Image 1 (cartoon, helix red, strand yellow):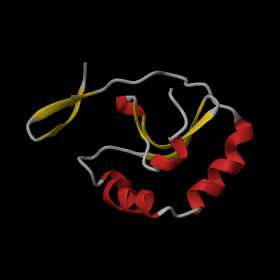
Image 2 (cartoon, rainbow, N blue to C red; image 1 turned 30 degrees about the vertical axis):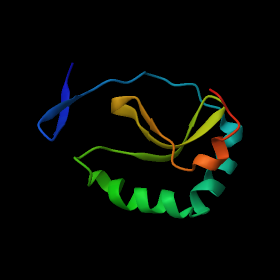
Image 3 (cartoon, rainbow, N blue to C red; image 1 turned 30 degrees about the horizontal axis):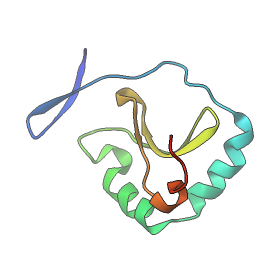
Length: 92
């Protein structure tokens, strides 16, 4: 696998799924969530936007299937969820 970057001398390898499912009916909600400016998400975004975190490209409020994830890194297949209370009653 291709090495994308190193974090503390640990190689970070490319790992992603091509063509993730996408439901366009979630686009308006995704845009509203992006503008909501939740403090914890804003602080995280300031640290990772524009590839400033180890040259890794993060997407904000990415639609995957029937869900909108807070942050997504396509090249790593990585999802980052920040706002914990919205997930308290969900087990998956």
